[in-house]
Length: 320
Image (cartoon, rainbow, N blue to C red):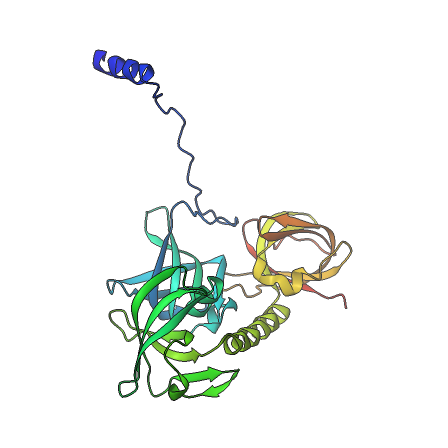
């Protein structure tokens, strides 16, 4: 005890105060809330092995050590495909992506809050593969992975192993391996080979226009999904005919049409986010923001007893 007191006295005399500020608690993923614990997460490059759309679960292979990891997709997870928003059905088995994981109550890394494909990562960071070597016989490219002006180099000696089914794109049109020249800057959509770290491209984009064309096509696919399937969200509160929802930002095609007085239909949904009951008509009485999500309050035409707080719902705008 005397030793501790003496040590504290020395700290005080030297102007170093003991830090008594309590550590800020790390947010915990909680059903019915959009929580992403950035303070405790892992972002792992891996190869998608399997997906179960009915349970929104899957497996991927960690390409750094070949460990097979299971994941459960949070209802609000961002699924970034073809350099924009997508959904689970858009991803292909074998695809290389970054999987962002968080721990459950057993400290297991299973909760997933995004899958980010390689196209999205490189496009978002304005990064490219700059071609340093071309082995036309083996169909291999050796590249430097860097940003748009090479002021930041992420990795050197990146090997891209093309295959007979690899497709090449330039100015949005089909191209060939022979169109690639030293110094070109590329982006890719790649898959693994079942072990180790390999980049085998399904698509090679020789310019930004080609990637943007794929991105625009994916945006149209996703918009169609949301308009047909409804904007997904959590049920915040259900009281008689009043219903409050937090709509996930992926539902922007529906959300941007909402305003006070807008007529909508809304249904409770299951784990697969598909409706579990016939939709109920309602009108928007309030709309605002809840972080990056939208929060909307509805006055329903019938009781909302089928909507359970922390449950999932889907919403469609019916006003023209």
